[in-house]
Length: 161
Image (cartoon, rainbow, N blue to C red; front, side):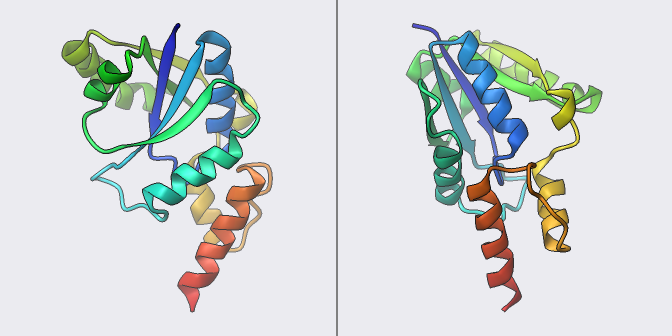
């Protein structure tokens, strides 16, 4: 059985993330969406909230599960016997950022990274931009799953109180 791990902060999960996971599932028997804690980012949602949003957004996609990573990605991948890491690329800047991590994971665990190019209609969708647009009252419909839109609006409303 082939297993792919799709790591990311998913703060929050977007339509682009969902598209990438669905496409990865066509290539692998099982896909594990791994909500990572990134020490260089200040997340809006807790890891548990991000996991729950991803689970709801990916409901109905067979062969996909969502977990939280609290440690080294390479070690996790070895533990679950993953065949590959799958990452989405929106453009050249993403590739630049992902290359070092891919090389490190190959060094640490002899694990290859598979890059999927974003759907052209979703190339502009990034979690950080979605949060910024939502914070200023702009529409995020179609950029995130419906459950994420509601959670984001709720989180922003609570932070204004």
